[in-house]
Length: 475
Ligand code: AMP
Ligand code: ZN
Image (cartoon, rainbow, N blue to C red):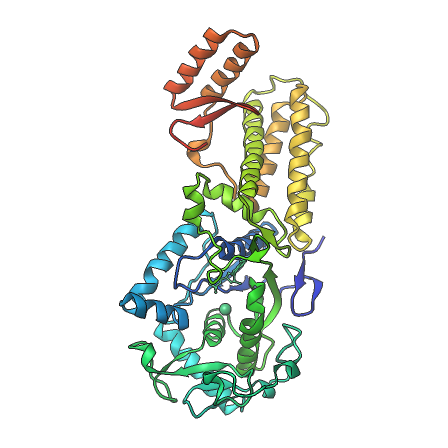
């Protein structure tokens, strides 16, 4: 079945047809972090959704070329650097590093390029684009020396957000920085330097200043991916004005349709409210790790709900993620065990046939329906566990199931950390210990616990039964 995505532009589910998949990769642009503080896990929900999208396209044999920009100059980064009393680059560097560290913890695949807005190469391109927009009558320099986009001259303005421009009629001089604009909705392409900007400035035909946030993305995406891109993503808060403005600027310069598919993810919420820096209701990745959870568990918690459905972040949700991963891990241990046993078990005609291989992938084809896909996985786990309980799984079937897992896991990215893979010897001792406990042979059980301990593992007896954890690890 063909891939289908909900396109924010049309507000419809559309069949995915990249412009020319045979000769070149899919061009994907994803709005990256504004590096004025450490990104919160709400931001990472967006990046994980984009990661899922890229991985699924790759599972479906598409090549993907993904660009994620780093916004290192705008109002918040300038203010932050000024307050910290350090140069802009030095101020943003620490948050860039933190972003890469957190993305790695969450197993987000690296983009092909991470352009930064302050790179002179891109500043030159922004200046060039603004020059073309002025010559096309789509932009003007106002009395405050800043350059603005003239939204009334771009008939499609508002189409992405399904926004009625008449709602944007000026109601008077509301804000100081809107005095000089022709229309209240006109947005800045180039902001004239003022004292608060300190030494953050670049030369331009319109005097010293700095780019507006929106033109940064138009310049970096067209510079690296060309005039037309296949997929552009972000969180829903990016739709207006940011992405609307990107369309106006890019199409205003190139005269070509900028983006074929616009995909936006719903927010991560806390108590029903958007997780946001400004509301102070946020957690960072290190905050979650400090509570004893792993990056893998957080990845799962942020991944498991369909990207267009708002997701409420709770610690119960984190615990559920842990339980789900435990189920997967235990299942894998059992399968590996049988796979290694070389047909020791009675062969079952249907153990392999239980694999509903295409269902997982077909669910993801349907606008990345991850909840349905995970439903297939957990049903499969239940069915195979039953088959294994009844000794109806031979090693060939177990291997086939492991192959299936390896394939779907290229999308999920939930492989167990190397130090969490339980060695067969330890697993065997644990099984013996369970038998001893069942027979109430406590002495033998304790001996086995010690042997397991000597191999670097701990056998814990929990409410759900015995568990193995790495000695000193969080389990
Ligand atoms: P920013 O650093 O504010 O430019 O945001 C980076 C990305 O995170 C953008 O794609 C935003 O739409 C997205 N984002 C911000 N807050 C949330 C949230 N609470 N849930 C999901 N995505 C978010
Ligand atoms: Zn952007």
